[in-house]
Image 1 (cartoon, rainbow, N blue to C red):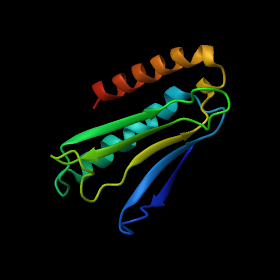
Image 2: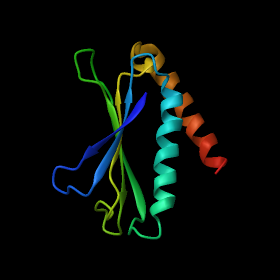
Image 3: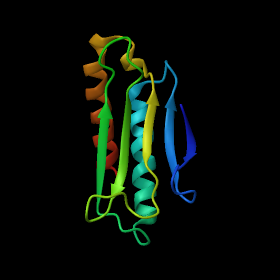
Length: 122
């Protein structure tokens, strides 16, 4: 897995961050990496940004022919619009958990448990 930066199409000063997964990357490890980045960036920008909440969208692969699913997160201001000065965060790619649909639910649960442990240790 690796992070890539993508410029915003409308605001050239804004950069979005995407964690790109390879087929063998475990989903729990990707979840931990994703949340570490979001939480550290959010804390670092808290004094200069107007963010008040975090919005998260998950788009699962529904059938085998679909494109890879993704997760999207963005910091929101008080009116639920994108917070000033903060890019959006994505996880893209086919994680190991998505290769076998029977294991996907267990892997998502493990990823959530990993994220919860990370949050408790902050």
